[in-house]
Image (cartoon, rainbow, N blue to C red; front, side, top):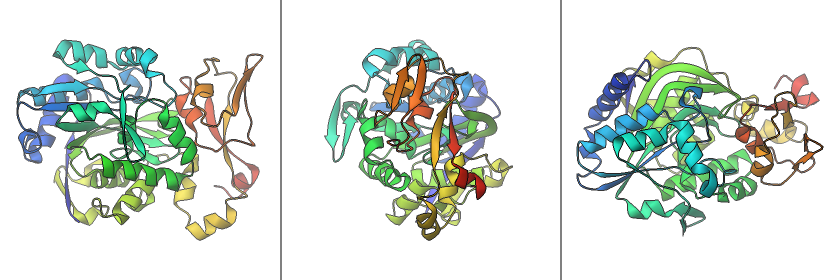
Length: 372
């Protein structure tokens, strides 16, 4: 199954450079009118994981959003801008603060674009999806290129998780806590909702213990665009130094024939893929599970354990981890955060939620001895 992905270099987030790169990438694909009809309604969905400044590399940069808005204004569409941030956030109370910190509020005000909350939902199969999807004709996804402790890569497919309204995302983490099950659930979501166009913010990526404050910024200088999320994620995996099939969402989506997972089946336009490939990305410590054959994993999985650990010196006692935990095993007592590991499902929502980067992923003794 073939797909087309446009790759364009962009060194930084200056307004002119980002605008040029976005227009070039979409132009290589045939132009915005190939995907979206004039005078229509379009939802633009960035990755607004949490209330962090654009410079953190955690959220989609507002200049990416601004450039896409300018592109859409060329064909006179009505633009909606929105996302449902991470599972632990009460959107009715916190979303406006997130808009402000991530730079989305300023972009929306300066460009005259409507910011929308994803607080209303309707059921689509197993998912309560934002009703904003019912009010638009097209949907553009703007993922941030990052590593992820549970899924290894958070890119085109993973960005769709933000279409699920509110704290129901916590229930999905609880129900599908095993990485392979979680990946299957994300691919179910991709089957239910296909973005019209996906444009990846890979100018600055995160590596290491992403997708939040524990991740480390890495300059990649990439804008990637296409309408096949599987193909895009395959390109991103290759840039990370991985085989596409090592990403469980890509593996599952390819099995269902939802897109191109083999690089030789992807037509790359613009820059060559090799222009963005350098030293392999530093991966989360949990990534070993995706590189070892499943029969071996089945033999050692009861012996090997990864678990979240709180650094009390960095912890601000904000309580974000308590709200994020889908199984309620994190408590705060006498000013200290404690975790009941007997009930921990290793979903790492707490680490993702921590604004201070105070929660790291540790390995048990056997995992350290066999150097996983």
